[in-house]
Image 1: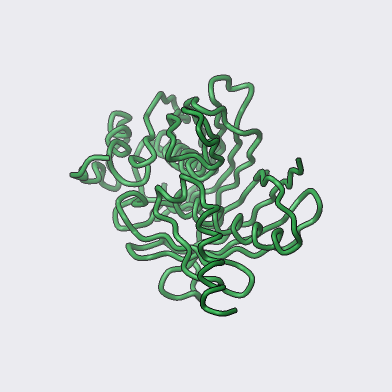
Image 2 (image 1 turned 30 degrees about the horizontal axis):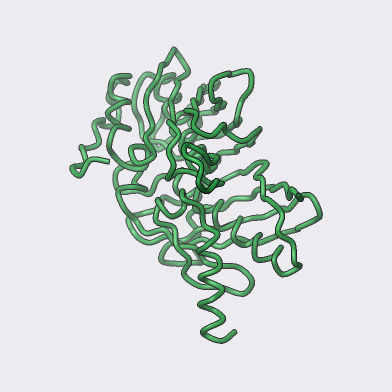
Length: 158
Length: 142
């Protein structure tokens, strides 16, 4: 992580610019610490990557380089960030929101050494709430590592 | 529990924390009843939106607290299965601010194959939790 933390680059109500997503994550805060990277996005979805790293391991395997299964904590952050950003993608603007709840199903252990990619979608946006879902995989979306479902509440109307 | 026994118990729990917990800055504050109280100091590493703790870091802390409580409960009955989280739901109750966060887990039920565990996180006032979680954990023997 950089010693100098860049300022939070978006103000509430500002139109959503995907180029800014990378800045939000790159080198700042918790997403920067675990190394999240912007991959791609569409009208109501976004993809974020979490490269494997030894210090993010939850189940270590001693003496074997590039081994150990990623902890589920970084997977929570990955899907929290990706689902959160899918709301901004769908609504077209950055607005503050609070995670009401987030459920994760750990379908299988992530493969040691592999980057985990989250694809998250905002499937319903109301005046007060945003409903999201996402999956995380490590190369094949048909063989997911985790599924997520969550709800974000507005801080101001969407 | 004497002071030495208590510090031994804390040290035993610290030894079970994975690299992820240590790199994030999660530590063990004390044993409260049956379960350890875990801590997470505020730093840029856990910073979310400006001025607030990241929800993912809170989720990670809650999961570590739940797992630590479960390990203690299982050890008391002489069991050391591998723990495989099946699912987890986190409810965010208040924004976490730039200060130390605490979390404790509670084992609702630990059967032979599945354990149901919950956890709660708070900051300066344990009566005002910032988040709670429940999780199901598969106990894998052998």
